[in-house]
Image (cartoon, rainbow, N blue to C red; front, top):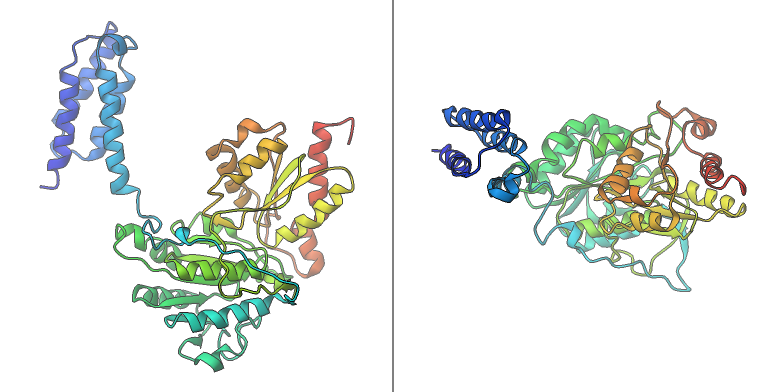
Amino acid sequence: MFQNPIKIERDALATIINRRTCRCVEEIKEAAVDDITEDLKKVLSPIRKDNFMAARKILRNICGTCAKSDNLKEELQGWLKRNYQDAEKSYNTFLYNEMPTSALNVKPVPPEYSENSPEVPGRQILRDNYDILFSKYPRLVTFGEDSGNIGGVNQSLEGLQKKFGDLRITDTGIREATILGQGIGLALRGMRPIAEIQYLDYLMYAIQILSDDLATTYYRTAGRMIAPLIISTRGHRLEGIWHSGSPMSMLINSVRGVYICSPRDMTRAAGFYNTLLEGESPAIVIEPLNGYRLKEKMPDNIGEFKIELGIPEILTEGSDLTIVTYGSTVRIAADSVKQLGAHDISVELIDVQTLVPFDRKKMILNSIKKTGRVLFLDEDVPGGTTAYMMQEVLEKHGGWNYLDSAPKTLTGKEHRPAYTTDGDYFSKPSAEDIFDAVYSMMKEAVPEKY
């Protein structure tokens, strides 16, 4: 019985072919059309692939004159369009939450500041934000290595286990895979868990659970089940081989179906947690590892502000070149932009904020229309996330059409970051590396000036 719709689809295709009125003047093409049609009819147990292969092969063998003397080409194209739309619904939908509860539907609320807004370490913004969230959402729980008793390895949960209890803020063993499994199970049962993986590098120990289970739940159940698990981790820059990696391409290429947020500071990180808890979408939030002690202004509306997913932020406006980056590299790029300004180079610096979804409003494209040049920058390996961003902007959004110079990427080295501050400097892009890359692009474009 399951083959009946496929046979109906095949028969409709055969009818279109058989009722054509023109005969091709090229005997080879005419014979090919007949042979393809007869071979399709002989398939005893057809699958949809057989129908589509036949239709596309026939279409390429129709003479150009058919468009004038017969409607065969038009009917075939219509058949393919209709049935591809149907196939799209059957095979390529429900990767992300498409309901009103999607995190993409959460309205942004900007952080608010006043003259009395104090400057505090970034980890305090996270802590105070969590304090409000645990009071606001009774189903919110979090767990991970050192999350409970000591308040997190960077003190972003300081004192909260004592206030809310060890059932809601819990320590776990060193077991990333089961931390993720615990989070998925809780999320499927209506809780709102935040599973903490202590460092971004350690997501490697849970990548199978992330890819096979979490990223596919909504997709493989055609939207009938969702596990809105939030994974909190920290990464990018520090000073060690296992604690300062930035394997972002591992994530974006393995866990499609899960949103990936890479904030530049803890205010942005807190805003993403606020957004994700109001919606129902699985996501990873990667806090910048070297930002917990850096001072930020405490928003007056702590616990309430929300950062919209998929919307970059233009941090500095410029006219000569666009730099596209995210996470901890934003701060380094900002330093370089100031240095470049002293040499009469005007750079537009864009923080993409989330890698998945990516630039939903094509803001980077609009920037390239203005500057004509772009540098994609990050700490991942060559050919990693910079290549992903380049494809999104140049190919999908059409940015290639507006370039006056060849696009460039600047990344970390192919290996894991070397140890110590010197290791960090020589393993990942520095402000000087960014300066030289941009200056080189401008020198190539305007050699008489640079």
